[in-house]
Image 1 (tube, one colour):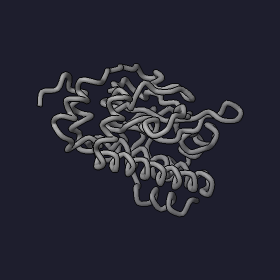
Image 2 (cartoon, one colour):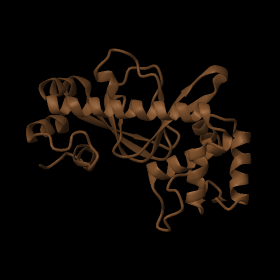
Image 3 (cartoon, one colour):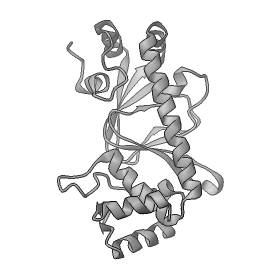
Image 4 (cartoon, rainbow, N blue to C red):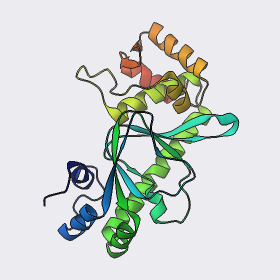
Length: 234
């Protein structure tokens, strides 16, 4: 079918989209009941403890999901890439979205209207199952990250975060340079540590030949050793 814009097509037809394979009728409903929103780098896509306008799909760009806790300290919960869906849990509960979603670079989001999508899910058991599967996978991932952040030492946490950045965003043509530019603060917040500890550990990894750092670019030069550190947690 002919979509109104390329972003809605990405969110419906993308290889990892939960909507892939739905009927033409349902595709037309989604095409008619959505809005686009553009966000500059650093812009707030969703503010924590608010009720989203609908289910959001990150159509382009990169984002982080985070929460600010005691002492105004930020913890990054998840890294997002196209075609990841945001705040879909609001379809199944009447609660506010507890996290803040921030654009890591200029990004475009497709917002599917809550009423139209809720009606579609109630009438489509296969689509409902896909959403349940997505929630389950996110919960498993969050539980695994919680264990890592509480049990691994500083080196293990930084190694895991670098590998996570690679696995989520991929690498450039050289197969080593991670295709995302995170600040040292973000790397620290992703690893549940202070910025000074993150900077110090990254410098040690450079001296050990595990990574090469140029500005915010990180190149993994010894992935096997980095994976071993992440696995052992030390």
